[in-house]
Image (tube, rainbow over all chains, first blue to last red; front, side, top):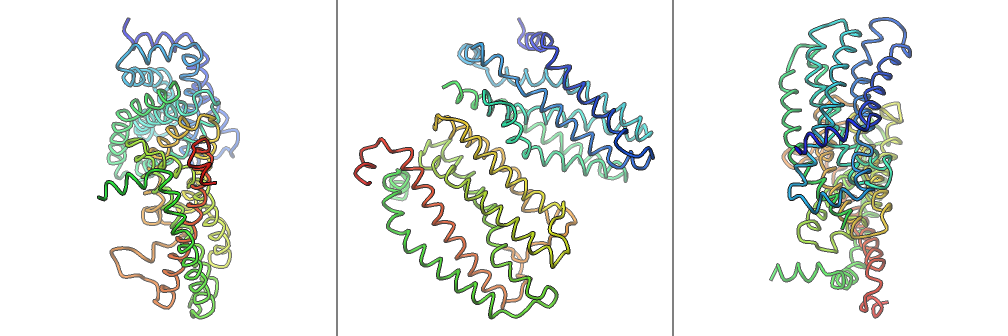
Length: 215
Length: 243
């Protein structure tokens, strides 16, 4: 059976793993207006920061036990021995996670952005950024999750969070670029460039890390 | 010949004997230079026109900040060396440097805060340089906790090396944070390409204090790496002879 489809089925079966992060994201977004004064200006002020941070948290939640089940039942070891293309399998796994968690979150980010900023153009420009950043965050947290494979998800989050800092900086600058109508494409391309490096490097690094765990 | 020397020096045994020979000289030389520079900087350098006497904290803050990033860069080089050439000593160095890196970063943050009170009127600002340095400090703690969470040293070394290499992305950001953002923190006064914007009467003791502080921290790294060697190689016969 196609491994991509198999990964999809495996994730689909674990409803908590893919639905949980999406629901957490939605809940944070819904809770946000309750914590600020109901003035449009106040709402817009901190919205984008919250959007990126909640995406970061959701992706962290999504990946916390991405390899744990396979590791515990021994299938990870079998996959490592039986397939020569372990990095490709990891890349596929990350892609499926992105397709099932990252894309819905990006779509919701468009909706929430539209409802809070009331600006269709801004919301449309936010969506590609969300798609790229969720994929980048997923890759980074998969790396953290692989490092702390059976040592609990908190350790993985602590050690990977600082690495996500550059992405948050670029996202913050992109929002300013959108609001002032300048350089948006440059930031988008910068993220795309970063993503292309990350999706090439992370599967290999993760496979080395998992090999080190299983040795 | 150089290759032979590197191969020999990369053995923990040779390293231990070689550093024991030079350690004492480096320590006394650095202590002398640092004390001399501190006395020069604190007592004989004129007051700053704007900041008054408070600027004198640079003789601690600048070397500590510089080292907090340099030590990470050294760890990254050691990680690459370990992963490619499997040099054991490099792995020992990575974990030997991590707590010292955390300590210097903490020192940079604390001395910066103390300096911030009279100069900026605040001890903390969520400013690009300060926040990124705080993240570097958290990264150091993360590295230490990752290494401590494994009882198998070899596995811990490999994982740590990967994390150090991936985390290196933050170093240029910290370095360039004062140029890329408009921040409270000033830009670098001493660069490789331009003439220093700091007065020579303050610059010379600063250079002296940096050399002295580097030397002292280098001695700490030597002690810490020796401890790692004792811990890891305790079953080897040469260690028993050495002790």
